[in-house]
Structure formats: C-alpha cells, structure tokens
Image (cartoon, rainbow, N blue to C red; front, side, top):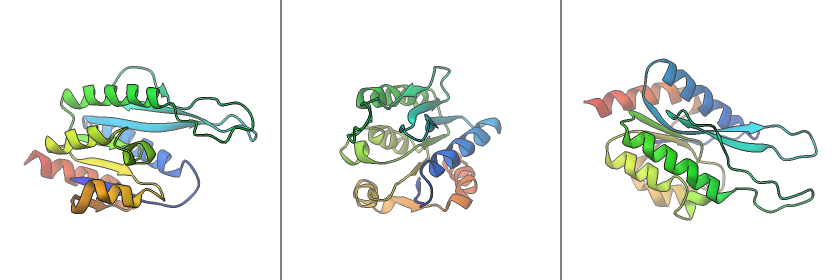
Length: 170
C-alpha cells in the first residue's frame, strides 16, 4: 500500500504533520522506518537548515541542506547527505519495519534518486508507505506509482497508517 498526502499551506506544514504522526505511531509501539524533515529557523534573512531524522535509527539527524551564501538562489539540497539518509532508512527497513513514512517525494525522487528505491523495496516486501507529494511533483509521482497510490487526507493519515499495517499483517 502506498499512501500520499498532498496539501497546500505554509512551508513546513507537511513536515510537522509527518513528524508528529511518526512520533505518535512509534510511541504506540509500531516499528516505523523512514525519515521526517526538521526545519531549523535561522532568522528572517536566512533560509532554514533542513535535517532528516531517520526513524528507527539511533544515529544523529542528517543535515541535507547546504549553505550557498547570502543572495544565492540555487538548490540547497546536499544530494550526498540525502543518499546517506536513504542508506540509513534502508538499513532500518531491512531490520523489519511495519510501516515507512517519508518526508516527501520530490525532485530527487522524480529523477529516480532519493527515496525512490526505498519506496519500491518496502512495497515489494508488503510494507506500507506514506509520503508527502508537494505541488509540482504530482505527475512524477503518478508516473512512478501508477494506480497503486492512494490519496490520504492529512486528517486521516493516522487511521490510514494503522489500517495499512493491519492489512499488511494479514
């Protein structure tokens, strides 16, 4: 099962939603693999730092943003750091997760990188996956997922996760 959330709102709103969801499900005893994004505010004149907390892993968060200097408008994503997080998530998945929650399916995944292989590996094993698809990446996600993906409202995300885990366990 592949669920996705698509929501408009303030930047970082989906990150907060998925982080809270993952923390709650882990607290309930679910074995959750994946990564949630933590945005660190650096003030009004700076873009936030972006860290990924790898779920089910005791290691430190992975800083996936890089500072490009003031006035820079280029992509701040550190692709190498993202791949480090991907490898850690894959290790947690390999240890027997019941659910995967991923911060987003976006540019890297659209180009066949990022968490794309983790999603495929989880689905091959029957492990449900929930992710966020930001505006502008719906077509790439649809091309990847086909008819396999199910839209999930942010209000129903917890229930979807619990239901998907129950179905996968049967």
